[in-house]
Length: 511
Image 1 (cartoon, one colour):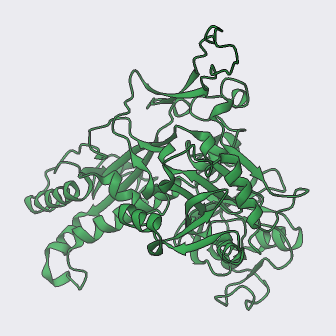
Image 2 (image 1 turned 180 degrees about the horizontal axis):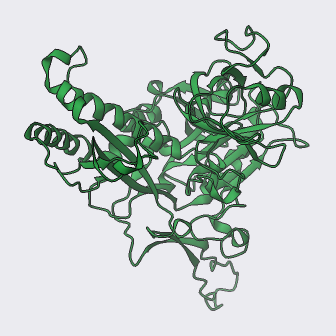
Image 3 (image 1 turned 135 degrees about the vertical axis):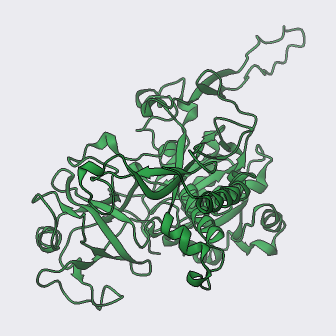
């Protein structure tokens, strides 16, 4: 079926705009969205050869220097340093053998949208539809890109702890003033914790699992219709497509869900919809390899180094420093001593590391009040970025807008609050040891699949199972009136000096 000239012309203009927005160094542009990732440099020199990229690490220094009072003694035996390598693999056929993440995005339009956009009768104050669509898509890509560095294990978004009255009626913007749950409702207000709220957004679809009952799925494709980051509440909605797995079939209301949380005190976990199978299979979650959670956790593999090997002699040097502040399994308040422990652990202030300007302490806003504590502690000084030489330099380099912290055990470091950072932890990152790499250096950072028309556009076909309108199966395979473009960004975060990085865990959000 031929496509009219005005459609081709419009899609071509859209394709040209994509080229303009996405092609020129998009990776560098995307990184500027995240307060942490925008400080990490792209390394175009590392290349994937034969399906993998080897990164060499030093496991033992040359320790052949010796003292002697015998001036005639022979020189000591040579003691060369020892090295090991870890592999960053690229295999497009097997996810388990691939360490690069594919950040994908899709754009869609229809014949009628194109007709309306080409007709001044339908134009409004939005102006340039093409530019608006692309800028919205680019912002979405940038947010996912920056967030992937901080994703928790299996991309778990939040927890509903399980206690009385954690599910309420959706009749208030604030949880404390909402009414207690009554009756059968299709919208409810829930209280979540242990969450970086920036990973949740209005309109997101989430799957909810019952951790108390062995990670059985309670609700599939439940929509978030409002996020209140102030008091950690979500408004959830049951709509067409939401299914109740515990009871089977389509979900009509939150009655059974409320009973599990409020009455039975069951703990619920929220994930991006589609991250797990219905039975909660743990190996099907959307774990982002190379993220900070994966990097700091020795119980997970890291770029072709199996869990069983991360603590042995050969690969021990690939493990960063971890400080568990929790006492008896309970989270504790942050103190200045925790910061000093971290500084002593990585030796930042002992003069061995000269790249002091790029040390960064990253925390979620739940821990940001630690800044007040540090300012009250006479042993540390905290200055806004533009009031110190280090902060001013980094502000010009990548827009740093946090604080500069100085302490004898830390030296001068940058202190920033990143809303996407993990809950209950503070990360001390040696930024020069982090790199952002792509499997095809020198090429376009963001690629769109070649299309059947107008460079990147495909014409979709009717399918009775997937179209918004459920057409009869006899129409399957026929050309539809819709067009779509699909693109992706391939990347990985790697670290070349793990022991210069430290994570403090087991912190609560109070002081």
